[in-house]
Length: 482
Image (cartoon, rainbow, N blue to C red):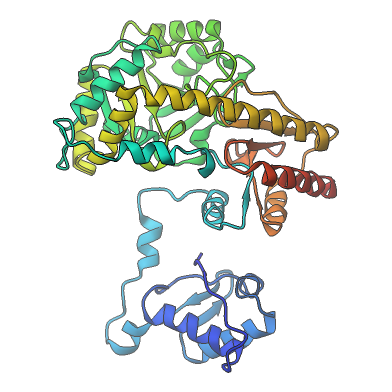
């Protein structure tokens, strides 16, 4: 589907349908909408261009008369010509066939719509999993970037595992979590997503089975699926992933590894209990099942810290640990890390060098300064307090507007409230109705394709004013769907 970020000018002397005709014609002739591109339905175009449907019909008739588009049964209206095929004897490349044959699976359509909607400043984002601009440390970052050039800053490529001085700082930071590792066992990556990509192509075979909690963040990104892996969900309860069946499932499905967000799980907010962590480690050790522990939310606790990470009790190198500053400090820095046995880190570092030749040296330097100066710990404590206040504010709104239509568990940290609707509805319909009201939600089906009962709410991004308005209006939309 094409993106349209333009509307015709009603004050112009040129009729609306001719403005739209010229806009689409230019897109085709410039090659932006290549051969085979499907145009949105007429009703959608009318909404995007903010005109009547009859105006769209008139514009499309002009384009069809020029031989640029064609309506086909079962496929809609598609681009059938462009400047190359008009002027050259040989047809232009069919880029759509290339797009469809690429090895990386596209995001589910709902996730693509969310990604597009997040770029619209008029949208109230009730599910976005990142810190609000008002919470980000812009002033402190200015101070960090008032660079005092020294031996730790290099604007060239860093070594394969990342800046040694940053890895030393990360090593010291991890000691506060009970993880004692040398810098040689740490790989700097461009966020947790890249960590998963490196693992998928560097350590696993196509067809490998990945166990994960269900629901799971993994279902919303196609990192493993695009590498030919198969995801297998394991239920979770209030204490985390349910471990009693993992041994049987591993033998039955020849599981390759297990992925878990042990603290402030995405999307449920669950914290795996101390006892469950010990049992999970014991079972995975017995079954020789490696674990990927994603701990990007681990610093964002409120009244009490969560249990120490699985990695802190890992005596045999069975756990690959992923950390990041994207959730706690700045998503724009794009800096995270993988901790694991040196041979694994060496392998992943080699793959990373083949793909991007290292994460940004400037971002690495900035994160190093945050960690070494103590500013990171100071800032994170401040963010915990602000997120705690936001959580309490959101819970008050839920008690006021959702008490009769939903249930929830109060999270002890992180960003998310996993809202369970008492009556099953079609969450896709709710998503579309909400978007028409400039409300963006994250339906549970993103994290579990069978889920029509849940919404992932976030108190980290929208302003308090927007949260108040957005949740009140959302409750009204849900009631109207009954």
